[in-house]
Image 1 (tube, rainbow, N blue to C red):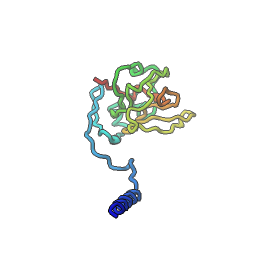
Image 2 (image 1 turned 180 degrees about the vertical axis):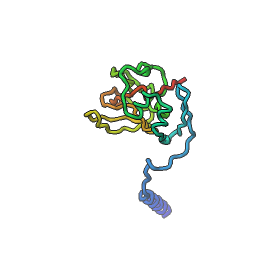
Image 3 (image 1 turned 45 degrees about the horizontal axis):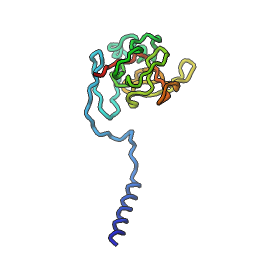
Image 4 (image 1 turned 60 degrees about the vertical axis):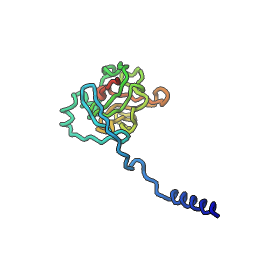
Length: 184
C-alpha cells in the first residue's frame, strides 16, 4: 500500500509538470552574469554580458559619422562594400577575436577564419551566433543573405553556402566593418 501511494504521488507530480505552460526561452529572463570588458586594438571598449544577448545600440547618422571613418560609415551604415583585397585583415593570421567596428561586439574568431580567395576576410561560422543577424538581401538583382551586427545593425557582409567543413558556410565580410583584438 505504501508503494502504491508513492507511485500515485510521483505520477500526479509528473502529470502536473507536463501540463505546465512552457516558457519561451527567447523571452525568458536570463540569469544575470558578470559583464566582460571587450577591448579593441584602437583602445575602444565595450561591455558584454556573458551568456546574454547584448544590448542594442542606436545612434543617428551624425553620431555614427563622428565615430566612424567615411569608409566604415559607407559599409556599416549604408551597406556599401570595400574593394576586394583592400583590407589589412584579409591576410591577418593572428589568434584573436573580430569585433564590429561600430560597437565592438564580438562577431567572429580567428579560429573560424579561412582563405576563400574572394578578396574579403572569410569565416565558416560566427564567434557568437546571437551577436549577428542574417537578413534576406534582394539588392543588386540577386537574393543573398546579409550579415548584420545584432547590437548596432551595422552591415558586416554576406553569408554563402560554399564554405568549408564543418558548416559549409562562407561568411564573406568587409574588413573595414571589423576590428581585430589579438589574444594574448
